[in-house]
Amino acid sequence: MIEAIQAMASVVTDPYLLFLIFATTVLGVIIGVLPGLGATTGAALLLPFTLTMEPVHAITVLATIYVSATFAGSITAILINTPGTSAAAATTFDGYPLAQRGEAGRALGIAVVSSTIGGIFSVLVLCIAAPMLARVAYEFRPPEYFALTLFGLSMLASISAGGTVRNLIGGCFGVWLATIGAEPTTGIERFMFGNYELYEGLAFVPVFIGLFAISELLIQSDRINQVVDTIGMKAVKLPTREDYKRIWKTVARSCGIGTFIGILPAEGATVASMIGYSEARRWSKHKEEFGKGSIEGIAGAEAANNAATGGAMVPTMVLGIPGSGTTAVILVGLMVHGLRPGPYLFTEQVGTVYQIFGAMLIANLMFLFMGLYAAKLFARISLVPLQLLWPIVFALAVIGAYALSSSLLDVWIVLIFGVVGFFARRNGFAVAPIAVGLILGEMVETNFQNSLKMFDGEWWQIPMQPLAAMFLIFAFLGLFGSPILAWIRNKRK
Image: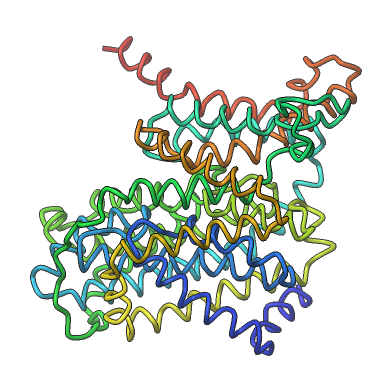
């Protein structure tokens, strides 16, 4: 415990790391206020440029982008009714109406304070819960990891707004992508078509850049000439004492909701914000204000979506199961830098882990001041013409992909998966399940094969293990729980 506290405190005494946190927080806020980018796209674009950094610095950059961009989406959600990130969609319901009434400063003040409290709460939970879960994870063997991974894949049913069936199809497509390359045990070539650069499979980085960044570029291409209505704002005002009295219960509730939702494999800030908003309305004494400018609605959504960021890091670092689309990118960063997620990370790399936690804590405090004193300035960034923004994004995507291994194949992969992501999104499919399926696909195959070796090919021994059986039941309920409940209700009627 003392070592962990010393590691977190060492962040404050490292000038270069502090500079990285500050610069990345500013960049994360900029990315968050630019409609169409967001934390996942920003992290995917920055991932190739972190490969030459020290592991702590690299993961700190990605984690800081995550927390700061998640908050910053609320700035444009309030001022121009356009969420900078999908996690801020629920903030538009009451943020923009409040801004239209001339209270944009009050709305932003509520958003930034709620976001900061949610973010700090989730990081503290991360510091406590992650080591505890890591100790439990020592009991995991290949059968348990196989069942856990299936549970993570089952949660794809609710990861995005694409719908259960479409999300599961996307996840299965991602799992199939993970089979490209040589089979781990026998070395048999699969779907390589004679291209030996694919022998070790698809590289995660170019696939992620294509799915998240290039596909978003193509989606945004039909909004080149879109004009948005802006709201005038003199300054961001701190909430009054009465505001704090009114929202504290909502913030506390949403902190718990967001952290819990974030910890669930494959969930994320978008789901958390929607649930936080709906629960704020459910428990409010002023339901009639929701949709017309309720500060409780803003607080509920913002505290939940930022609390989900720390929560989502728990399964990512302890179990290697991404808690969201952005943590899928962070997971790739961990693996590239040799920090294999799992229980041993918390025994062999304690200092590294808690330095990352400390950096996330400082990032939350930094965007508190940026949100209160620089929101007006950052809001103007959203007025950058798309004709200028997206060529820059495209250039960064191509450069980042090529820099990974100086291979033109990676550039082609970026372009191909950009088109794949574009057509998927145009037809109602989300790209996050594809990315998560790609990461979990390798884990499914490897742990299933190792389980068969343990039990001499007797696969039915897997569900006989208590922990594995528990996760398989959770996976079954995740997939079929809603239809079963609906059937029971119909039978009762």
